[in-house]
Image (cartoon, rainbow, N blue to C red; front, side, top):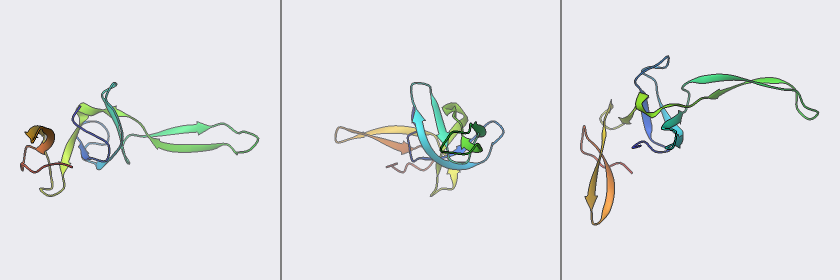
Length: 101
């Protein structure tokens, strides 16, 4: 999976298509990501002795194939490639050729 935590991505498919956000969590084993402000789900919290019952809204995971890296300099989505320099593997935005990270 080429998308990592703290990357800015744009959603390509689903109810939140076109939204951009920061990746809060990447789950490579499941090929899913959690994006800030995307795929908001409602969770009901039961009442306990210490806390009252409430309804929480939180982000749910979406498949990594439904998001694409968003190049903030070029203001458009871009695929990610790799380049090896001095024995180190560096991520590169294919649209502009700029290095990521």
